[in-house]
Image 1 (tube, rainbow, N blue to C red):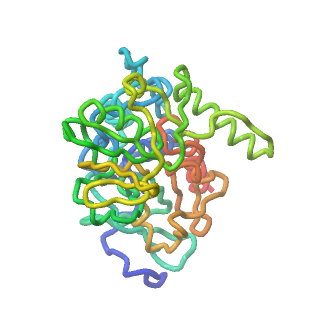
Image 2 (spheres, helix red, strand yellow):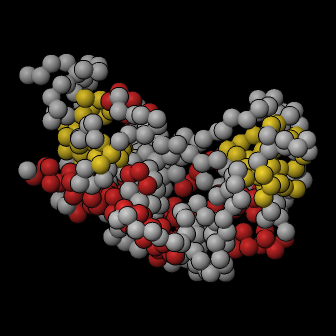
Image 3 (cartoon, helix red, strand yellow):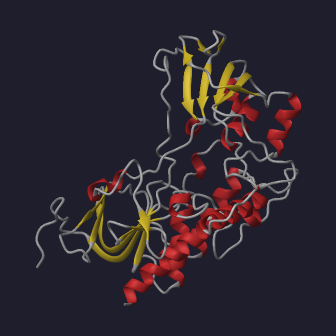
Length: 375
């Protein structure tokens, strides 16, 4: 019999299972699909554990007017195409269409997502390097041969530090907390950030408020006829070329701004003009280094997210906010091969933080786990 856990005493009632997938969003569902297709039975051989009280991952918590920048057929998880969305936006699905699709996806494949259970820790059961990992949430725990972390980034919005940020008397919120332009009717609002989220939020808020858009670097706008289909294909080709030591011209990354209908409308209204980043905030304004300032009521920080990895802290693997991964799947933790990370961005698989891009990483992860299980 092995000794006590090297991190803590093992929970006595932990349920033994083959695989625990942490996170019921797009990455967790795609991984669950491939585990099921490989012969594991949901609820018996593996479990998908989700902190939310409803399906859809982070999508139900995004802003009301969010649109994908690819048509439905190019925004699908493995095994089932997203039903089409046809309207004047060239078929770019809105948030609620994505939520409905993810809800039906987990029902279609009977993934039996366990929710709401927020996993608080993953730890080693003992010193056996091929032993079990203990996954713990309030009121329940599992003892697993393999753990897939697919918690994404939405729970860790990134707030930059600027002089005066604590003294500004107006409202400050992150894009994760933005919901609709009506909340800012008649106000003066600064939108910070140079990506798709900032552009779409600016487009909305500018219909109800006077706005200023500030970015660290000039934003990159794609041509009107370029959408997510071209963007993903070019990004993948670039990754492959660089991996082979070849030069590659084209779209630099998934942060380039796609001209969806709302962003085009903002351009037509003349509000899609970015200013350089301000130097500081005062009690009632943002101020630039040249001495100019602009009084405002609110600042919306569209400054991105960081990986949500606090539940993995007991494993002591995190370095500078990430865990080193590799192996045959590209998602296996190098210092803890029983742990896999799916869906956090390019460091866990090209475009793996997207609906269209997570499939290959999920497939490779499931294949590795199934291969280890059968060996």
